[in-house]
Image (cartoon, rainbow, N blue to C red):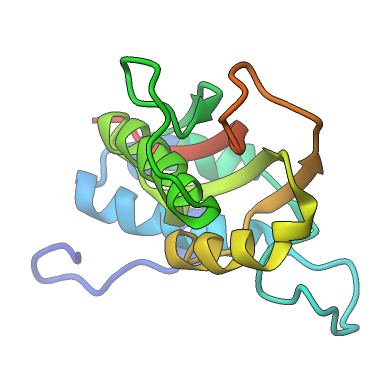
Length: 176
């Protein structure tokens, strides 16, 4: 979204702007700038192509000055499994449980007024690493921009039938 009568700001223009002026920008403009800041902060350590290309970034540089200027807020999601709130796992197949888990995180992100496009870090536990490709297929359905991620195999989770837990998910949003 752009301001009336004014072209959308660039990161260079934001960088040149005093904090008070930037924080006075309309919400929609600060919100749009946050997406640019997050995209600019994602980096790969090497230009070498990996078989996992496009599924994660190697590191994220949090530019605190830019984040302050747009009034960004860090959102930390709780550990989330494929269980419903009644404790019953959703889905009978690996892919169904993976999707349910991502949908639960999506609910949390939505409640926090953010989304998967603004996730910069994710840590996932899987009970069966032999299902790596199935996990990555579902991951691609939900993750538009690759955050820093770690996927760790484990022998079990809190309940025996659980197959996945998104242990850590960090995203950003703009304060009102």
